[in-house]
Image (cartoon, rainbow, N blue to C red):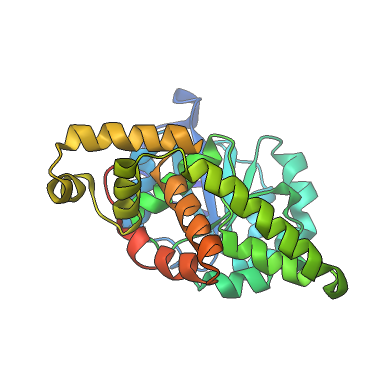
Amino acid sequence: MRQLAPHVAVGSALSATQPQQMPHLRTLLFVGPSDLVSGAMAAAIQREFPFLVVSQSVDIRSALEEFDIPLRLLLVDVPHLNELNACVQQLLAQHPTLILAIVTDSDLRETAERLHALDTQHIHGILPLNVSLDILLSMLRIILKGGTYFPSITFKAREVTTRPAEESSNRDAVKAGLELEARSKVMGQLTKRENEILTKIALGNQNKIIASALGLSEHTVKIHIHNIIRKLGVHNRTEAVALYFDYKEKSSGKPGIRAERSGSNSAHHGDA
């Protein structure tokens, strides 16, 4: 255990290494209750991103301190949203390259209802912690590369709480029509086989399961997945599944399809 900043506890396999010996290292700081992140999760994150040292604090003010290893990513639990709003400008002034995101181990619908109080212009994502580890690592990879990750349900809740009721009906209808048309064109690029594979990915099937079910080799399945990702204009299978569920939800007219699936089956897929 090493102290990077006052009141910030650090769990790292790199604790014996002096910061000046590894200048590329950066700090990932979780702010939330002491049990927000398990030791196993912290270790997995550090294995996946060797340049990160995972730290945790129960106080968001600790992120305003000087860090021996520069602070790169700040993940804040939902109960600290008001504190984050109060000091976000100070945080960004203290750490100009800081990436901010919200994390939650609660139902995303509950999180979404609180977003009306949050200025999201500086927020790069809302990451559910109650998903499988590979999904969480994929979400972290997206935002560390400069992308954003906002589940569609959080956008819907924010629209409901911020848009005047008298304007919402027509705008929603037009927007929904345009979104469905755009998604239909994108999904229409996929071949029958690619659609079969994307459906199985969305159900949480790993490559070897898909290969066995369709009578293909794993290598062929990986090639199809690569083509799916390219055609859909996404970065990985996680984003492909998100787009798939958004499309299915819009085309079926049944809200909640994506929320239900992403909270269960789709969170359990494996290899990329």
